[in-house]
Image (cartoon, rainbow, N blue to C red; front, top):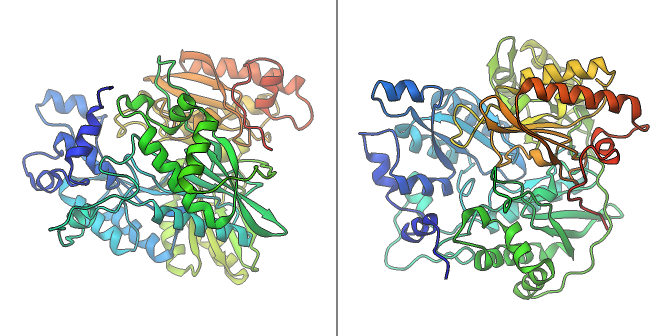
Length: 558
């Protein structure tokens, strides 16, 4: 029998995620948690971090690292009310670094919360009727749902199912309420986790719901995905897909990105049963000895797609029907005003790297605070780090536009398609895994790539570019036409050849190169593309057709 990983031992000893978190939080000597508790707090929606910009100076002056905590919300489908927006904005200013960050999983992140303020911050988030439980850790994380645009009843149904799925897959432990909300401690009976068991899942688990023709959730990158099938404008059911995942490890060929397999079709009433069956199958069959091999994608590749499908059907007590046809057109957002099916309007705003802050002449935090004070609809975070001001009466459109202009910001429709589509992870200075810059580097990188596009008369061409500080893939880089994946400070692996639908993985083109070489290579390839492309041919498709990179994995729709 393989030896269990150290994290499995931590979970087994944790008393259902309690560990010694209360003692760690009360320890005034250090700004950090005990080592085991640093793992357990992830299940509660937080990561311990430190400021890597100041790490060496603090070491030289015999100070411990500048520890703080990132807090992530559980917001299924990314939907919050104006009151909730204002509450999170106030918390970011009071306890965090003053900014909110919209994630690629339709959640909020607060950065820079110190240990002694951690409990107060999480309690206040809960007071706004948002929580943080299961936002991180070896459990099902925030459930995504198509948010762009909110223009049909189907999107409302997708959000409803995302919410129900998220609630169904929540841990049952009372530890969260005891530690953060001063809930009554459980005594006298042993707690049971009916879905997860005492050691939860072997690794993180991600789920999403997409409504064709939009694949804004990048469904095939998820452990579990549901494709809404509409017939006659009504929801007939879902195609279920399993086994997606993007994280890899540099230099380890046994790790790789993988697109999900479409298993079959199910009626809506079977969604929760099938989801639970997939989760429990991964719980029992996943690798708990090597965390690099513990995601569902490796479980499926080890036992086979058909065997995994049979396991899910047996556990759910049903047979999946053959997949029904569907078609995705793109995985981006559409900016500006879109009319909804009820006659109201939805405004999609481009938020670069999802960072809500007042910087220079662009005061996004102040603008959205002012809008939230008057808005009667809701806010919807998109999977592409953007924001939809949803449910705006036609008569209020002018007022919303005026508030944006007053604070020096706009919807972003005037920006290049490259800049509209670009994604970046947080990376330095707070992410402990980052090997290179991402969010802080993105604006300069985009400016330099835009100059190449202008040179080749391609500035209006939709091109997807994503950058991450490490190979874990938080900004889903392996699906982009152009991806930079951090290898070392100022150096990246260049991947090419994804598509604009989220249905094809890109491939490594050059390894461990700096900006000058990256731009030189892109200059050459964009020049060839401008001269040789077919009408309406995307950049990634051109690269595949001309064998610049060989095709990798592609999802074939039924």
